[in-house]
Length: 496
Image 1 (cartoon, helix red, strand yellow):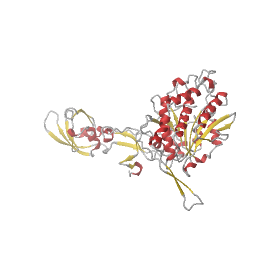
Image 2: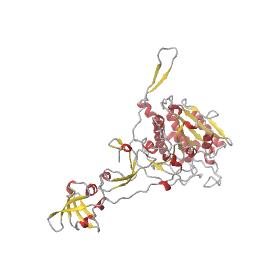
Image 3: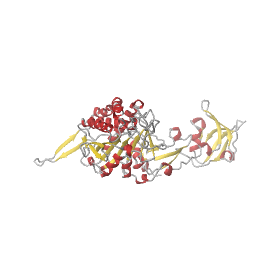
Image 4: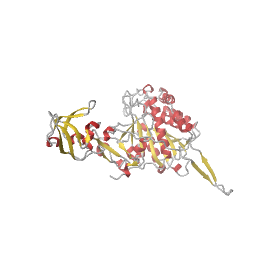
């Protein structure tokens, strides 16, 4: 990987739904018979569904990284003997899997420039039509060798093993290949696994493939890039590119389910890894990484510092994502506006609304463990409370027809009642209860949220503010949450 990552947007996840595998009907015509022959491919069993996830093992990931990041490979510089050894190791491992077929120009390899070589395999989709569409998933297997003044952060002249960059991504890809091989492949679309060479020399491998594709570029529908995923350590995995397609963020968020992995999404789109040449060709992309660190492009990027369990978790998630992508009725389409936008340039202005009590203009002491008294401790100047003659020490008995004793939080009443209300108040120093008429500031917030819409996420509204004490606040909604449905109705189908 070649560049820095700006700040990350916060994310909250939507609920996961397993996609059911449909029975695939393959019809072949036999001209010598009266009727067509109907062949039924049975859906995957529960055992088949769980086997791929179980096949992604931290122990196997460690084995692959230990070889690829060993001193014997001398930092896997593109075109070097170590780089060739790494390519041979990957090719020999994948060639043992009978469902994977070579997809290069020379068997599984695609040679270019100074004896550099991409490594490509594919697994053909089962649907007669959708199999022509391709999900391409890849990562680079080269690193910087002994380092030089242009690609090393020092010291130069020592082996840069690149355990995280990017032996981690290669090991994950190899485990995904193992997962695909673990059961008969029922996916409708075709998957291409790509191991790019010479990424560290300027994304040369992916650029060459885009210029000289081994499959028609027009058939690529989604590109996943895995680069530096070895330092998860209980942090969220970071994803770049979801704004490259309409609704891609939602599509990716839905795949987490019960898997122990969290996602963070970033607006930035820099030419720092192998997703970028595909993005420039207006293809939806998603780039997975766990962030830079002090060992980046240094000899200290060694296997001992890799979080193997973290890679396993990411592998399980990406397998789920891959299966959803190959079987989806349709995939998110490219969003042209993403080419010109950036977080700094295009981030929406977040409007911060007044807290709910400011409709009234008081502060109060609240004792829910006793009898839910609301005694006024301050009356703010120029507010409805001052205009109505409320004073410090007054106790509010009811407000807008709601008894304070029967409400979990007085702020919820203030936020949601109509603008013109009556309050029953016990005046300070007196047992007398009087009716006080008030005209509150602002409109009532029935739910207590404000939001904006984003063209990149057409099936959601994004919360910019949750008013304190409102229904939304009590239910646990937070700024940045996405709402996709209301009463099982898609949010974009509900009239404003």
